[in-house]
Length: 200
Image 1: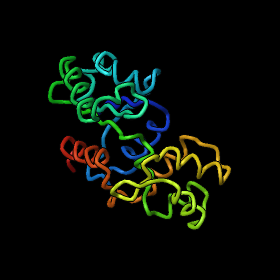
Image 2: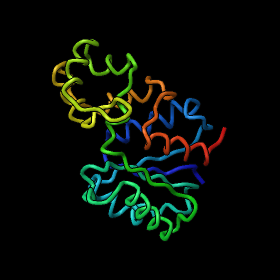
Image 3: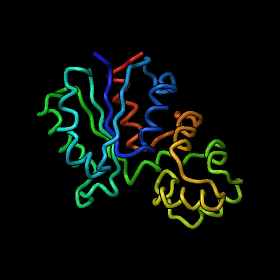
C-alpha cells in the first residue's frame, strides 16, 4: 500500500501540496511518504459533494486519505467550516476510510497560507516591502495579521508586479517559506494530522 492519497480542488492546491509533501517532510515533522494527489475536475463544489465517491476505489491502495478544498466557493458557506469538514469526513468513513481520513477546509481559501512575514513572499510576488505594505494597508486583517481577503490581496500584488498567476508561485512559496510560524488553523490541522499518521 502507498501511504497517502490526497484530493484537492485545483492546480494551485496540487502544487502547494506536492511541494510540501515531497520536499518539506522534515519541516512538517514527518517521515518521507509515498503520495498521489488528484485534482477534482469540478473544483471545490465537486470535492465537497463527491470526495467519498471519488476516493472509494482507492481504499485498498492507500493507508490514508486527505481531502482539501476552499471554504469560499464550495457552495456551503451557510455552514461553518468545521461542520463541512465533519460532514465530508463522515461520508468518507462510510465509504471505507473509517479511522484513515481527514478533511481540511481552507477558510476562506488557499491563499490564507501564503501570507507571512517571509522575504520569500515578497520575492515570489515580485514586490518591494514598501509596495506590498501599500497594497496590504487596503485590506482588513485577521487576528494573525493576514488579509481577510487573501486571494484578492495576492492577485493585486501580482497585477502590480505584472507576474502572471500560476501554480509555480504556490510551489515556490511552499518550498521556501518557513513553516514554523504558520499558525493558521487549517495549516496547523494539516501538520498535526500528518504527524499523527507519519511520525518521523
